[in-house]
Length: 274
Figure 1 (cartoon, rainbow, N blue to C red):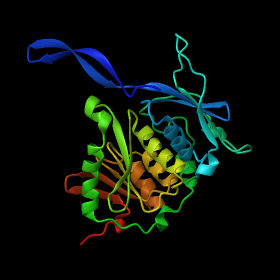
Figure 2: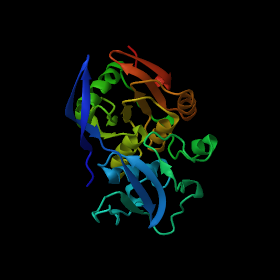
Figure 3: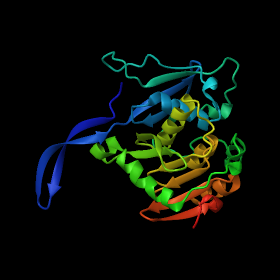
Figure 4: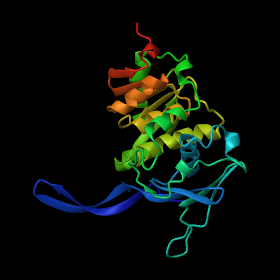
């Protein structure tokens, strides 16, 4: 399997002095995703939990909504110059006859920071969300929200050694961390969490919270809704389009969640104030 970190020799500067030392970097490698043997897309990711990544990607694309929709995942022949298996190609088996929308065939290189690369219009994405998150009866206390960033940060093992990874964590309504995934791409980290939940048979994720280490983009809001998650919280700011989508879908969107403060941009009724 691919490594999550790599060691490189760097020149470290302090004041007017410099010295060479080893440094740990977050690994970034391409992953080709195939559906029933047919190439779908290539994404840049940090190796690790690759099956979760592919499963979550398929949820976000509307190609899988339950564990039964994904009959198999396997690494395919992908070799480097020395003929060694790279573990950079995965074939996902969907039930025969399952329709793969033309819009999902993004046979292009997707960077680890990609947003809505090559997708259909925003309006079409809004119409694809399969769950009614507005009907979710989740209520959460402010103190529960305030505890999420520290719980997320404490579980970021690879970040501790590299400082270069995003994280996403799935929590219960009372703040218990169920799953954490790290990746150079914030959307990949979310896909890995959602894919884990799909493979565990947990979708839709009614009554759960999703916490991300960076900002809340439109795409992350859409991915949360596609998994049936009623509340998305972020350490940093949301985009205006993310707020619009959350408001339209009835999803609670929390930003600038730091210390004992936060901004609730949509779905304020789910925050149980004293």
